Image 1 (cartoon, chains in turn purple, red):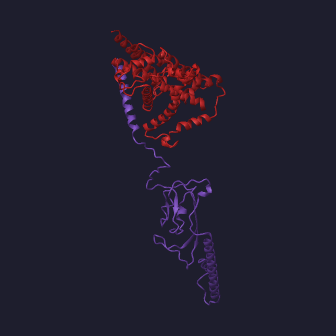
Image 2 (image 1 turned 90 degrees about the vertical axis):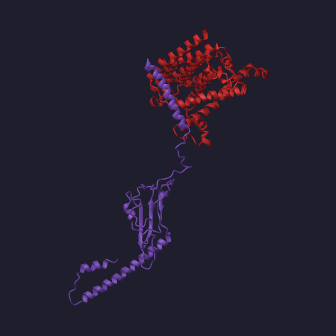
Length: 202
Length: 339
């Protein structure tokens, strides 16, 4: 009998306690973040959209190697000895024209593995995370700052330069071969090594 | 109000139509508002925000948008359903809950029908909901629906007894079954309200009435008939579109009906709490509606506080707690009135 009364009293009392708790929460500010109106504060090391600062890129391909999903596509062209590509902000001399630097952000898995190997810290995560598109092709990000005509010229020059070099080398080998043929004593170099030498600088 | 209309118009039919439609003018905006309020209250009690975008300010258009959606929905009737009963049930449900308002005095000047057995009529007519629920559950031809309907019928019948006994306590003091008469007896300051009279008995009766009325309108913690986590949605599982909306409307109308009865019987109905201050027909309506809305809010508050009872616990509360205590109140008041 005592238990019966105590149960009734306790049930009423605990209901009142519960009501007090819920009423208290009625006036607690909501934890909801009204997303499109209010942007949540991202953690410091949040990984979002990639960005490449092409001024600093030396075309080392390290990010491409690191990428686990192969979403980075880079093409480089050697610069001529006469070209001055400038230096990066970290003080490294740039030696390659980067004629293609595409990131397929649709493939990107935001692992951040490309960020760490970069010697000039030019590829990095930004705070942009809203970049949905209607067309998947729009998610192919092209970071190269050179125009198509510039790239064409660079490639042409490089090809010419290579041809010149090749011609020079060919001439040099011819000279070497001639001197070898006319040489009296047995030369130290075997024919194989000569071929190797001629191919090396190309 | 009836007299006022009679002075202007001569047509009985027109007068009765106007009198019958007046509660609807309150009920429809009320339902729209309360569904929105319920979502907001539930959200804020859980530290959320609830609807925020529809209509600009705190999603105030949300219910209207939902209603539009429900209006446009396809009316799906299960192939194996009993067509007639299935289509009839939502309307009987709403008719039952709306019929209650015929005898509820909204103000000193307005009562749908000032009959001398108002309370009796309300108790009788509100039981119509059980019929509708059973119809819906049976006609849906779905085991969840049937389970819900059976539970609901059992629950409503079970909780009608403490409800009626608690109402009987007030009726014994008032000596009348007319709600308008009961209201007139509570005129004056708020200590004239029945809840503060004959102290322990009427107060206990009020609590019993309130708890039992929660069960009658299938609100948490007594919502086992539509227990979402067990029965999908109970007897409304198979309903969609406007028929679902009718059930929803009936549920919220029922909520207000039991709150209005509680306000009328125990809290002085349309009486101002401050004697003659702010009294009169229009202020009377204001006080009546605010008292009703207060109880509706408490129902929401309880809903988002308490978990659902088990079926055996539900039986326990009804048969072993509410009913005996209601009898104690009835006997106590009876003795008090005799002395």
